[in-house]
Image 1 (cartoon, helix red, strand yellow):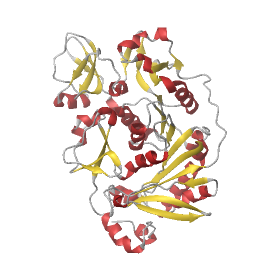
Image 2 (spheres, helix red, strand yellow):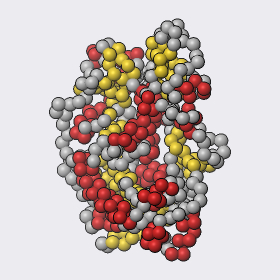
Image 3 (cartoon, rainbow, N blue to C red):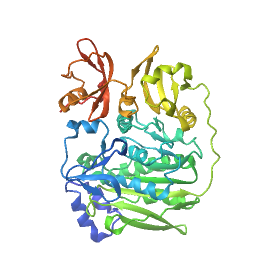
Image 4 (spheres, helix red, strand yellow):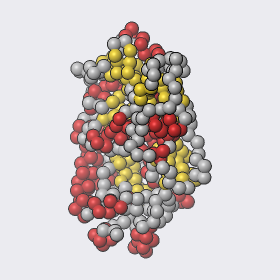
Length: 454
């Protein structure tokens, strides 16, 4: 049952005659959609139909048991709600994606939008993927690792800390925490948690995030604001003040047959263009999104690396990495005081490092592993990166063994003559690490990642 106050407020962003069809749609079934990973050569699933606004997005004919799909754990695709894939279309229409950009995904967990952004950015662009709640950041870090890209910084900061990065970003995405009205069909718990008081609380939180994040954009930078809710308090009303401060709302090219509702709100002699996704009109959950371009400049913060956590690894001390990295020259290497070794894309390495040090990043670039004298205990993320040399011993697992590996159980294959580290793969894609001992395999799949129920 839908909350009574939700029904009575009738603030759905729709004309009254459409309310009945809209509310009825919230009792229907949700479609299942995925977005392919272009870096791992994902293919259109059998029987799938395309998402109109995302070339890598597909609706599945029925929901799979993704837990038992080893391709999912290898990062071949991401299970993502179709409406939220529209972020990619906005990026394509508003940014020169062929250039090297610096982008912030402020409220990034569980990682759908961050992995989508990484699919579109140039290899030497930088994404800062941020999540303030540590419990949610764990799943974010897993999903980013599975996507296999190294031009990303993961951080766990609040918006007040991030506000110090003035004039840094070409684009900022704020997928704001909201009251969750757009998830009423998909998540019945969202109905129980909804209240007018929570709407007001969300509005205050959203306004604070926007206020703190606005200075981080460069002049002419793009701020994308989205929620999974319908009411205008959490949506248009949060953005209208920016029209008074020198921002311009961006009108997008949206074909009519996509059935996205485009609204225009007049304010301060300007127009705010917004885009709403309603489940009675299209195959997707409730979603709101709008984008504004900043019309003035900020004094850019000067980043520095005093007492750095990431210390450059001199070339003469990095020779041991040649057996672990396919193209050593593609990266610059850094080591923490805990002996963790990271590879940062060479062209942007120092800029990535400076941003990471300023915000106290959780991880930066590719985590290759932990140094053990002149050897390495490889990191789980490095297995998923697809950057290992062909000479590294590899074991491609059949489905049953792959699932056992992902459950952190024993595999049935005999150990080879070559002892030591082996890259465990499935259909040629990295899953994790096995170590061959004289009479058995040691499974190094992370305990926190393991499949607990098949």
